Length: 192
Image (cartoon, rainbow, N blue to C red; front, side, top):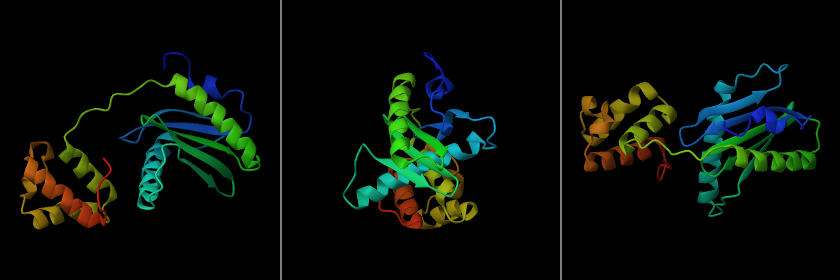
């Protein structure tokens, strides 16, 4: 990070326990800060926060209530979390002490998000073939990932060996792959 660090951005928020910055669309940990007394592993959590925003966006879209200003608030017994997407490039998750009033958490979150928005770079998403993204999505979300590609092969007629090299699929095969994955996962469309 060129202008500072996540730690510098949040050092004046005493109730904050951790910050996780997830790079989108691949849901990979970009940066994090966790208080030394916490035992959280940022790498273990980062992808879930990106997926959480993606799933909530799809839920809102199904209700015809999509908004670019969506924010997810999670309240558990020991942590209060704010999860928000910044510019489509990042998902930022802020974990606060549970006893902090929600209004104060929202105020701190707004200030930290504004600072991080200035700090984080604009990412250029790596251009990967759509078939590769679809296959990765299937492997990530299929109820039985080991058999999922076999099911796609049976449904589409595309040989399993060909499906294992998705970057080489033709346009018509990609369409068959996507339709099959949607059917297997029970989705109308894939948000990739």
